Image: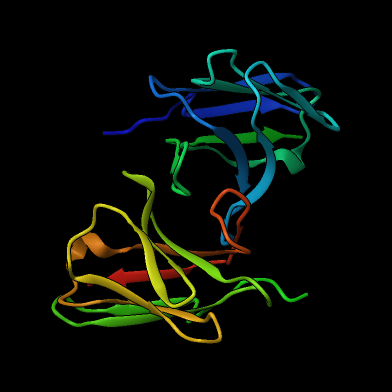
Length: 111
Length: 112
């Protein structure tokens, strides 16, 4: 059973466009992380959010954790070719160190 | 600080064989987690070792096993390889929790 669903699965956009990626679950998480993975490399942690309703900004990237701690979104403003990659969300559970990864969103930004 | 290293980076095996993959964590990190990544199933947790003890385990058959040495380096072993074991195997290390972990580049295993 996949606990974390990401949408869209694939996204192809032009440089300069804005986009939002969603991460949804029926489970409540103690924390939610976002990673970016480039071909031939392992995932790189972008951000960790731990409070319901929390919003974090990392340059052109804005991350939000849902009030109920069941969902999250990643918004990229003015996308650039360097943003191309696989974006993964991962949820952490209370009283355990285990992480569950989402299904992934593959983003392609064309110049 | 050097990052997480994994060896080998690429491996080709045939069905029925066994394979051992190695992971060297970031210096000072005591937790090592292993994941399998495939296009169909995404990133799935195999197991986590902390101070030479398996602390968490995913839902994989017993053909998948691992261990951790006193220097925190870890190995995972897959016996009796199946075609479906073809995947990118990722290792991640952290000080003491999966919540803040750093991934290695992975080992690409192809089973023919």
